[in-house]
Length: 263
Image (cartoon, rainbow, N blue to C red; front, side, top):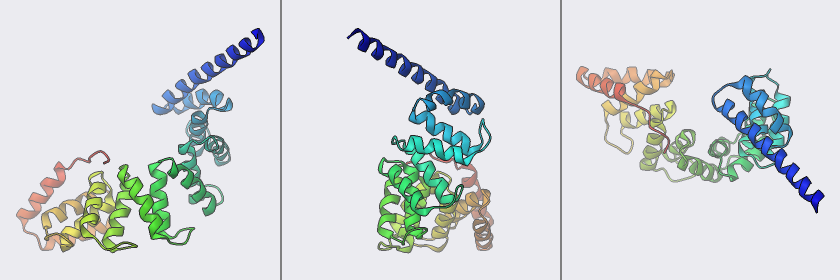
């Protein structure tokens, strides 16, 4: 009994040290002090701490605090992902999908799905896009709608944009301009340039709403300011049919715009 108690105490001591080490690891990573983060994450990661492993994978993937090494990134991400860490699962999805390692769509979708099923909004948004575009899987609008909706409701601007596009074009669902405007607006208010441009086009052309050149100009302007080339062209076309007073009003609204938190 005494020996069992001693072993238990030792295990608790090891666990407490690993936890303390992870606190230092997480704090350094959160403050972008990557050199310290790499040093502090190594011990808890080697002891099996999933979050530390996930952070170590990220440091290797992005070359932060250590030389970039995709093989090491994959190794640590897999260690964390197999313990159920959704950040690592999502990161593996990105790496296999984007070809940072030999591109493998099936492997990518496997990890995205594991993360998405745990509620990871980024993974859900990616699956929404993948199924809608049919990249690496047969196009499936039902799956695209399911995952995009889940992510959009968590505030993902990418998913909100994708959902707006689906409703606007009637892809796999009946066309619904009201729903398109709702989701485009949520993404645009977060600063999504594609959504801002598309929302501008809706007001420009009067799709589901009365034409409103001032609102159209505002959204085109904000999108163009982020370098969105289509918005720049749309803005020039719109300026031709606007009065100087309308342009001045729209520019004032554009200057007053502040991105909103995700919703």
